[in-house]
Image 1: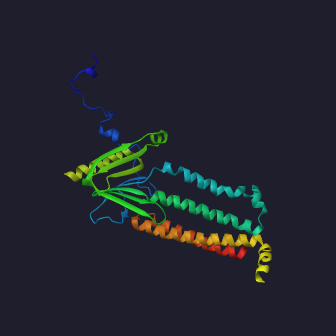
Image 2: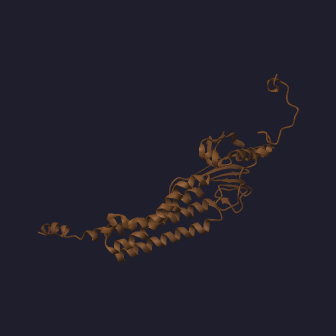
Image 3: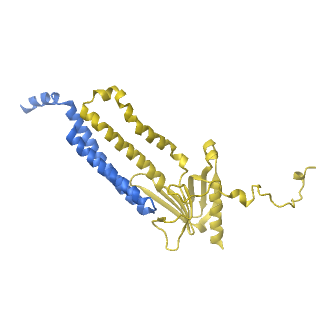
Length: 209
Length: 78
């Protein structure tokens, strides 16, 4: 009878490659302290609006950089599009002074497109501190929403990762269920979600002690 | 009657002058949008204070100043 069908527990220690071994929960890519990193462990020189005096940021998370490919490619296309302007019949109908101004106006709009998308990625962050979970969202030019809950209110932390890109680049969604007024925090497209969940659980355990 | 002169004067209107008016008006609205971006970056930097705040504020201001320059250029050149 194969040993998997017996009820006797294995006496062998866990192999380092076992799914339960702590070594397999090391991040596949190291959390970086790079300025444009999507996952930063214990970031330095980062403060947020409602941060307490003794509150320290443990994790700073943004959407994985892969989610920015669309607008980055768009920006690159817009940068080179003025080279094709003379091939448009409407462009050739314009007087010289209009044609002269069309390129600076085009690049002004391209720059605004780039800046808005970058700001949207850079400032929409998820924070885990030693006291709270904070979700900072900027939905439009003048509307922001900051949700937070204390670590003690966290009831459940789960993550999901599916699809080709997410599996390839190791990013996924993290769902934090709380007993607070804001019952669910969803962190979208976070790099190394398994490692992040591990860190959140460590923070919870430390808080409970 | 003045209304008899209105229709011919509209029909004699230079279309490029009308286009210039539209472009200048559009760039003026864009100027307000650029100012809003400056305000937005300021608000964002206050919410999350990081190392890129100063470069981003600078970029927003450069964008706004460029928008002013292109607006003035459009009034002069077009």
